[in-house]
Length: 88
Image (tube, rainbow, N blue to C red; front, top):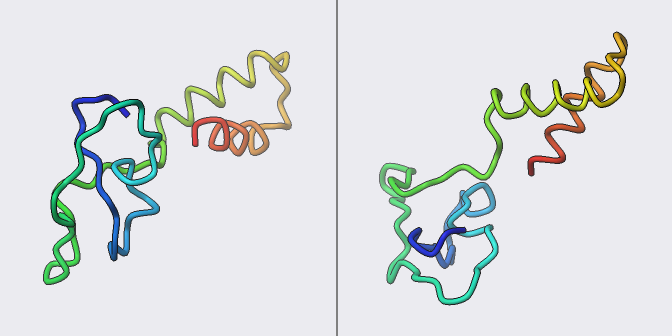
């Protein structure tokens, strides 16, 4: 995680395992929120950053894997799953 992104301590947050602010590696000195930013009334966090890759990134990575594998026609699901795993 870049230094300019404030990290989250997670404490009792129900979505912390899906948020980069909690799960990313801390590199050197890093700022943290003083209080948990999750809002239990609205069940949301305005500072949430998903740690799951979006579909376009997965598609591009799967395409690269397909090219590197010699363009097989029967491995699209395997390439997609490998791309997801590589990006997590």
